[in-house]
Image 1 (cartoon, rainbow, N blue to C red):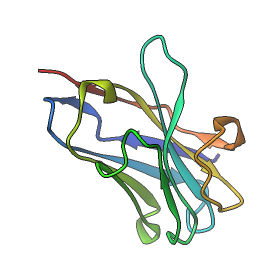
Image 2 (tube, rainbow, N blue to C red):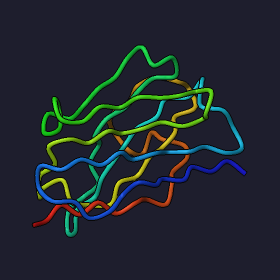
Image 3 (spheres, helix red, strand yellow):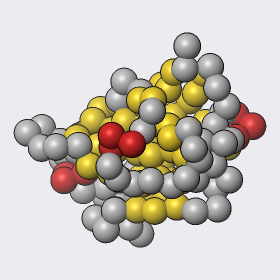
Image 4 (cartoon, rainbow, N blue to C red):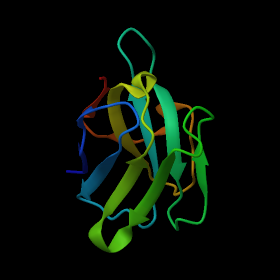
Length: 125
């Protein structure tokens, strides 16, 4: 069965960094677009970043641009989200999702075919 598993979340102080990983099984990521989404308590899910199958195209939502970096290691079947200079408003559950056609799609979330379970990110002093 096609699966995505996120890891790397946790509690971090404002200004700190976390690196999230999205590992795939049941398929290879080299021909898939990958998106990162987050959902804060009481708010709707929003697109954070995406990367296309070749890694040649990336997008970021304005609130994280310059602080977050998405990358992929197709040999390891894994996509990463490096998060630096974290702010309390970055708190939420972070999900990765796969778009089988390989393009970079930051929204809508309904376009994605497969989703992970999510990993909690909490930014607090």
